[in-house]
Every structure is written in C-alpha cells, then in structure tokens.
Length: 133
Image (cartoon, rainbow, N blue to C red):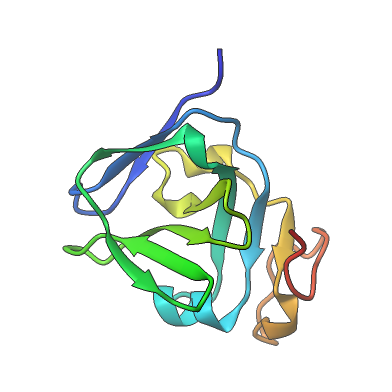
C-alpha cells in the first residue's frame, strides 16, 4: 500500500491528494518562484503525475514560462503545483500546501545561482546552481 497525503489552499476551495512517498524535496531560489509566490524561497516536492488528484475544485493556471504552468487558487491565490514539460511524468507541489508539511523536509537547494545573498537556510544541504532533472 502506498502513502497517502493530502493538501490544499488557504481558503479550502482547492484540495488534492497524492498517493506516493514524499521525496525529491527542494528549496527553490529562482527568481520566478520568488515573483509568483511573493516569498523568498519556495520548497517543492516532486511526485509521479499519475499519483496526484484534485479532490475538490479546479485550479487557475498561469504559464510562467514556455515550459512551465503553475496552478493556484483563483480565490485565495495560494500556489499549489507546477507542471513542466521538461519532466512530463511528474508534478511539483508546494510543501507548504500539504496538510502535514512537517513530513517533507528539504533534501537540497536548487537554482542557488539566484539565491538572495542574505538568506541562510539549511546550509548543510547539497546545492545545485540550476536544477538537475
């Protein structure tokens, strides 16, 4: 039996479930994540696309680049997921949108070449200048 996890947006309009282990968890420092979230870093986890299901509501979509679409709540604005055609069999989810984000500690940093110079977070983790798929 595989693991079952749930999450959703702040206002409750969107809910999702994933039936997969919480793995491949990274703090992303790219400027696109900063600008789309309003935060200084976004922590993502990656799951097989077929393990993910929207269980309540339908998200709004935003093509943040030629290869990426971000999904968010049209009512409260919470960013929930990201799909990139560079990795068509997987989906990235924001760790903060999980019901139990404490179960998903990051295992690396990505896009550190864009990291804010004054940010010091989980400095013991491996770092990638970009993201290695």
